[in-house]
Length: 90
Image 1: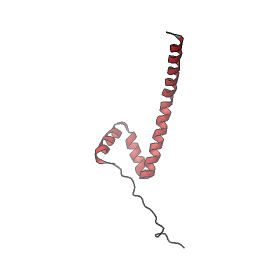
Image 2 (image 1 turned 180 degrees about the horizontal axis):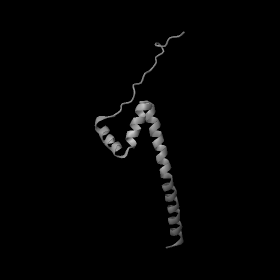
Image 3 (image 1 turned 90 degrees about the vertical axis):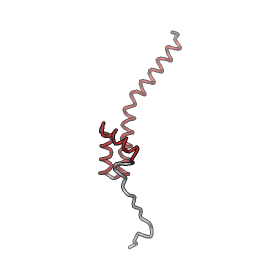
Image 4 (image 1 turned 120 degrees about the vertical axis):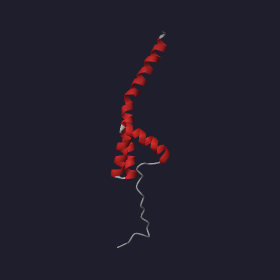
């Protein structure tokens, strides 16, 4: 094996090792983003229950399969908007 190829293999191994070490951190960040998004969309209680069900190993998979065909098990809260005409100025 020539020295150039050996150096290339060592560099590739170093890069792959750094990426592999970063994957758990990326997973945690993605999970945190998912939890925040669900809680904002569904409210604290419903969003927390929805996230807990998704993170439970067997139940989360069953829920995901069910939601593919039937939609959300726990629907998002209804959006209430305040229009300028509805506000009362005191």
